[in-house]
Length: 251
Image (cartoon, rainbow, N blue to C red; front, side, top):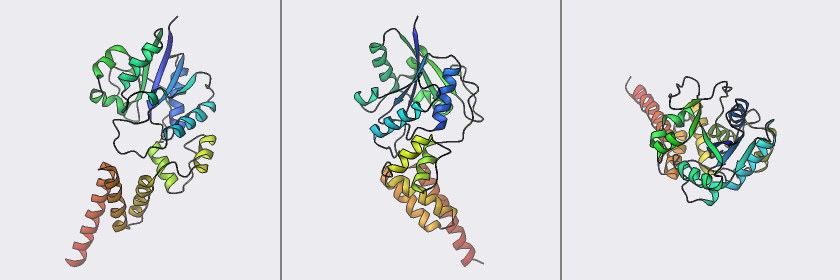
């Protein structure tokens, strides 16, 4: 009997309760015999992401899986660490199919990635050769080319929000498992200056310190070689300051 393995690709920066909930739902649905988290050392579709060290992300993923009720059916793989970079899904699949010729592989992804599948390397071969299981976020419609994963808890969690909370010294217990929360607390160096500046910029914006917010967002964009969110926030702050200036000096 063919062994069925679903691959869940991502940077997992860090892995959180949402990542676990989706994987557990795939196992519960009987869509696979095992699910493997494929930790990506670099995501070619995300230009500016403050990535923690790949070995630390790998370790956190293994710690999270160990806390899952389906720990025997979940595995964390570092296969992409030894492959050419940047990592492309189709290349990793080609490698795994050679390593495990009697295995049927499928792919798990979110609705946001499914909507952009035609930008992926050899996307037509991906669609024709592999089942792609998609978990939609609120309001997303899943294309009929994909297999819909239903019954997924709608958890409003993102790795970006967790990194920003860490930079802003806010609690993250509700987003990650206890072991991950303890690990992150013990390793404040996981993420660098980019997330600190981004979090401070958002805090300054919320406090109406628009000049300070502009400085932070401009710095983020400069460090990243361009960052859409930071550029948008800086422009919004400039528009507010411009409006205030005109309101004061043009009564």
